[in-house]
Image 1 (tube, rainbow, N blue to C red):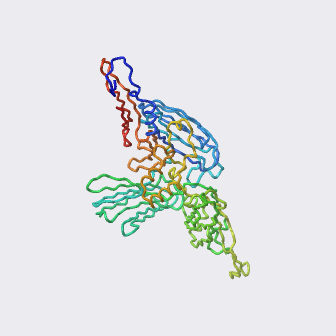
Image 2: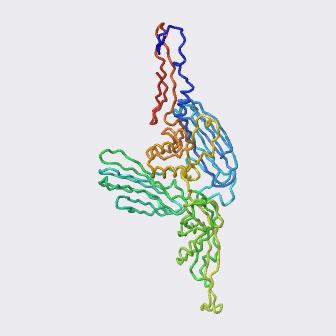
Image 3: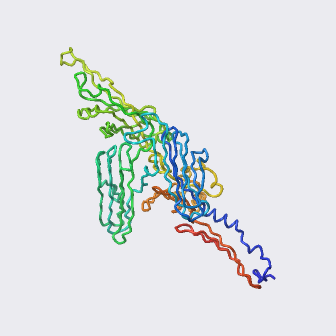
Length: 554
């Protein structure tokens, strides 16, 4: 009678202590392996009215289905629907956006996250943009396609951290672009940093080539190679590709990398191109044959509290064909205006090119800008006075303004939490567990508390207190917002687990750690006088890496 697990007859009641609490177990597993949503995002570059064309296609009949939604900032769902089996659904939506507004394309697993892959390539089109501001050079500023605009992420370093013979192959491809492109390979070792390759590819060139390296590496040299693509104005990045791989002779396992890019993805101000007045370029006795160009720029920086140093600004003039005819580097003062600067043009061929059609001026800066107060380029000539109408004797000269060209302004982004936002497209992962599952994305949660993590890092650096470090960090399964890293070998952005990803045309959601939660039933023997031990094996099922999901009661 005092036996902990007595033998009882058929039909006798089971002590409640032997009956597992399924709800507690399920809640525990759901908390440990939360749903992780994959979100493709688009950030509006301009204010206006947009149309959203969305077709989502579930690829497999496996699993319990997916939920998808489209959301405009914090305004709630524009649409929320599901696909339980293989098939597709199409939505045609319209809304008004302000500059910087985000549209979220969110994929959720219903409960289990097994094989929840979908094809989802939304297209966004402005139905209202001012005439003349719907293009930049040859770039369409009205239509944005997540698939057509897609570019790879970046992981630009080849790290040789052990002794052996290595082989590196980095092919590059460039089509015609609106600006010159510079490829740079930098070697970093215990001696310091050295540029080992710098290759300038002109804007109108079509190039296929590669950078190759084979050598014997000594571990103590700590050798790394960095790959970077630089330009000085916005361009079509789908036309420039530079990726490669490297391997050790002894194992042949190839590691892939993708070059980083200096990009100006945020259009802050778009100005119409125009024909310069004849006085700016004409050759006559009225003016000296030189042309003076004075850039004028006044801006508001996005982070005016921390971004207060001088900054580099690139000025580019493009001709009627969108080919660059002038590059110049300026300095932005801490006062957010350009350091006074005059560009003197004596090349008559260049001046002639400026007279052959509509000219576009562009300022580009890596620091993120909030707005532009003034952006223009003044053209000045030295006006000559003569002794008489027929005389060639100059009696005086005066520099006069002959024309002004309003300029486009592009900047980079200070944060890459959502990716590089090329053509507005980005991505992140989001905690879609329990109460969050049925609610719109909480936009206030889409941030990283950098001050918090800075303080944690500084505390650990001074104390090396591992326990305090662990207590200070938010557990992965409790995080709301996840920055997606780029997996160069798989060519996809990865969320809280390897089964939460966004690639060129495919999105997949799942659970963190394990794809599916499965709770087995307890089976009791039916023969009198016999009872199988009340064992519950609760587990989560996964095809990938992650935290072990085995929890057992016996």
